[in-house]
Length: 286
Image (cartoon, rainbow, N blue to C red):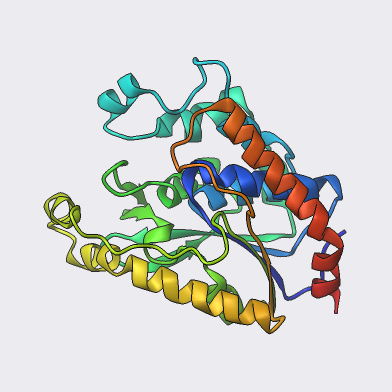
């Protein structure tokens, strides 16, 4: 079943906190319930493409590991690749070898999927999609997930990009502006969370991105922009204008590696969506 036209699904990032979203979307896929427009950021982008390709369990498999050989977080690899996560593993070996991504289903889908990236030159969010080229799709996902300082920039169509969450962490405004009046928002933080402004680490960003002044401004203003968006979301939630799915337990850290903790947070996402599924459908179908 596909929800009514004009419905949107907005997916926040949060690195390994994204397993909460994975659980929620796996439940939706088990119910064969699809929302026609999806906007995903960072880990939310990875969840988004697996939702469109209808691969329940794939994001979970990619993010939660017991075996060491397929892990995307390893200190030796971090030093070698100068990246916190092994991005080649996540966006090349996983989709093309280890946990095959169903490109055919994705490209043939009637769902519209936009992945948020931050243009390093302008410092602004861009909302990219790809419906033909496999390599470009994974490049966009990689760019959306590339955390500043922890990952190198990713060039797509000749433009350097980083994590979409820098410029638009929760793209609800974009979804509304593009005509999606009824939105389900999946967050990976608890109600009332607010991001703190950067303090001690400012000099690191200035040194790393001295050639990208607009990007630096975007990074420094991220917390204010993020918190303002959360204020809108909480207000609209009270007014019944958006439907929010969020964790009610303490989230895992963005670099959590303990199998048991990740499985528990994944299951919490699954159970939360299961509990709220009928109410969510009623909201979208009114």
